[in-house]
Image (cartoon, rainbow, N blue to C red):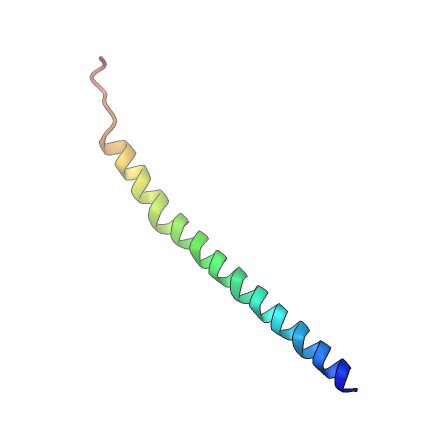
Length: 53
């Protein structure tokens, strides 16, 4: 019984670490989408050269 309990506890630890990793990756992707991409788009619009060569 002790071995089964230990195995379940280890499995829960691994799952919680995986969930934490996925939460961090999701947050990083949201920040990229909501902050970096719009700023990069605005930067590209403002530095675009319309007058030709």
